[in-house]
Length: 175
Image (cartoon, rainbow, N blue to C red; front, side):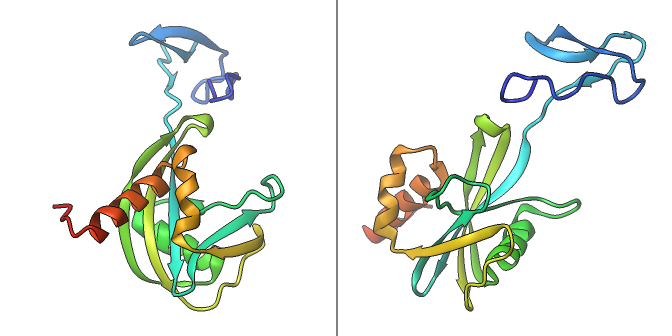
């Protein structure tokens, strides 16, 4: 089942027979009605990269054309076939913002259950002039202190990155 609770498949992609709900390993899963086929839809999460992109002016937040008005976020994107998450983060930063990645640091991985995604987050130090692509219709540059309010939302990657910065500012090693 999709995160919304609706089935995204109705028929088996292997044999074309209807899918039915069965209990597999204690969870309800969509399975082929034909036991000889053996197809199980696991509904694994989709890997997505999320980037906190920082330039010499501050943190770049963008507004996606499909998002509600006034909702700005960090940059996100899907991995392409045979691409590492780090490569995807660098590519998406270039594609969506037109910026070059000067330094990239892994922040962490976070489940985003609402959309059945696994966020793989990075902090990117970037350079160049921001030129948004056709997926975006606006951007703004904010200072790090503006992001502190995000700690109370589902933006785990931002909260962890800010916590890491705070620890480093206090002179405590993370290793």
